[in-house]
Every structure is written in C-alpha cells, then in structure tokens.
Length: 150
Image 1 (tube, rainbow, N blue to C red):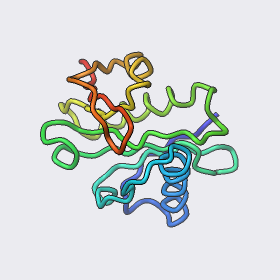
Image 2: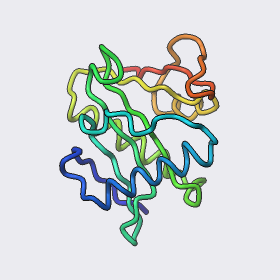
Image 3: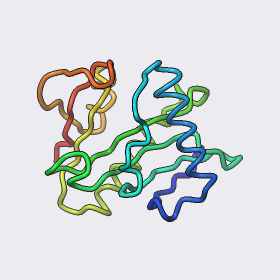
Image 4: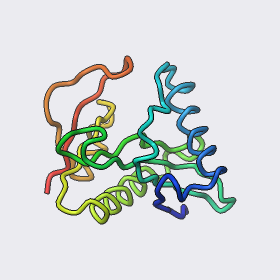
C-alpha cells in the first residue's frame, strides 16, 4: 500500500526532491541505459506526485506539467516511474490514476497528453489514453504520443 501526495516544487522537502531525482535516475538512466538530461528545468513548474511506502520512502513518482511546458495545448503527465523492487503489484495503475485525478483537479478543462514508451500502450489504454500519431524515438527508446480520451 502506498500513500500518494501531490506537491508543487516549493512544497517538496529536500529529501523528497533528492529521492525523486534518485528514483528517476535509477530507472530512466541506469536501468534503461538511457543517457539524457533528466533534470531539464521543468521541475519548478511541475506538480510532483509522490508514492511513499510505510517507511516513507519515495518508490513511485510522476510529474504533471501545465500547458505550455511540454505541449502547447495539453497538460502533460510524465516521468512516470515505479521502483524496480515494487513492480508487478499494480502500483503503476494507482500512480497513473492518482496523477490523472490531480491533473484534472488542478488543470480543469485541459486535455492530458503523455509520451508513452510504446511497449506500455496497452497499460495506458486501460486508463483511457489513445495513441495520437506514429511511433517515434525519444532518447533512443520507441515512444508514442497518447491523449486521454474524455
């Protein structure tokens, strides 16, 4: 069981910020062997979704960017990640659902777009996202743009 929190950049504690960057780096840079600029200057504008375990450790994370910071006409949910040791327990579904709820609550009347790793299309389909366009490479990994159907 995870406790989910949604915080602005300024509301994050130093430990939460550190643990979020650590988790993102462990998965996206090390595990997926992808060299890219994770700390991209967008975090100060984002809402940060943290999933913490009973020991108060961040083991799930996503960020929500307002219109204009990732896509001109869409709110973006990105950096969706679950610690490797906690995968396979449906926590990703909880994380995505909570993120959608927070994005909808904070950015009323805005459509949500994601850049999904293509192998996760069925996962995101189960949350109402539909593919939008052709597959493309992002940081050397096949991705597909997806929009949450309303």
